[in-house]
Amino acid sequence: MSRFKAIPEAHLLLFRGDSILLLKRFNTGYEDGKYSVVAGHIEAAESATRAMAREALEEAGLVIRPEALRLRHVIYRNGTEERISFFFGADRWEGEPVNREPHKCSELAWFSARGLPDNMVPYVRHAIEQVALGEAYSEFGWPR
Image: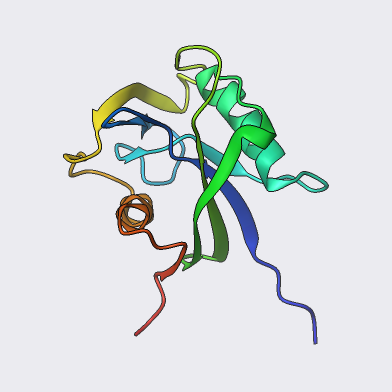
């Protein structure tokens, strides 16, 4: 029997006051036209915090030191494959967000965390709601 493998991902829940940084997916083949957060796959031999710092720089031009990241939520989710999604927050970063991947992102902007867009990637909305409730862990997409 082969050992099960899940795909790990890192997501950035970046807040400034009552606003959260969101991006609109474009031309990716997954949930295009919906809002999400800066995120990406964790590569082999890469820690989750280093992956998040790398993605913040690649996608939004933000410099975030891995030690400045704090784990806010984890989702074990089921879709076309099983994934473990780590959601990190940061209180300190350098730079202002800029869309560094316009071929995959049609918008990058601050939105009210109390009035999220209707067209959000469902598990990302779920994570933001769980963080607001103080929950550290949840499951998403599994049959009840």
